[in-house]
Image (tube, rainbow, N blue to C red):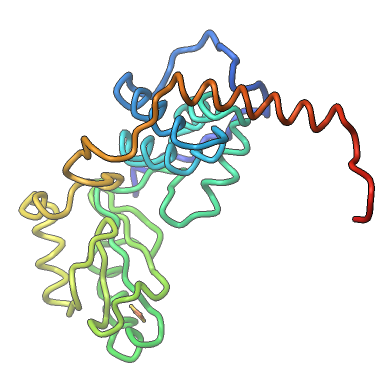
Length: 233
Ligand code: FES
């Protein structure tokens, strides 16, 4: 029915940040370069885990097991930790999703304004239940909690972009436009963070970061060496 593939289990816990692994990298050179720049913005590399998940998702449309392995190497955690973190957040997908992730809110304001009927209509016209992906891979339908757009109920988002209140008729038009590419200008494919790359703003000098990290490690080692400072808890 659907062409979705089953999620592949993530590998066993392993290695440190400095590890070099003889395996093909999954993230492209461009994504890796951006990821390394993001890592330098944080005092601890592992703090960049979620932004890196978003970068990887932007590359592939979802978080592949291979991408999670690369991220683990970049921030010095295990692939299982990347997987465990990613699965906690709704916006990160560890199995394939369609080009368009269509979310229908069924929380109270939307429910009172026809959300249940709209979702039922969506399921029947798309031929999938909420959580499923159409056979052509173009749409994944999702039932969402309040999307903070209650005054335009029933609220629908596509790829996390608001598309306003929908009726069954306008929903069908929306789906047709998504499939034909007519909405590609305002709704890029799933995973796209932004359409315009920022070229200014937060940047870190790798040499400065390295020296600050070394100083931090030295201070930590000193603290550990000096033992408990005594006193209460
Ligand atoms: S209840 Fe649907 S957006 Fe808030």
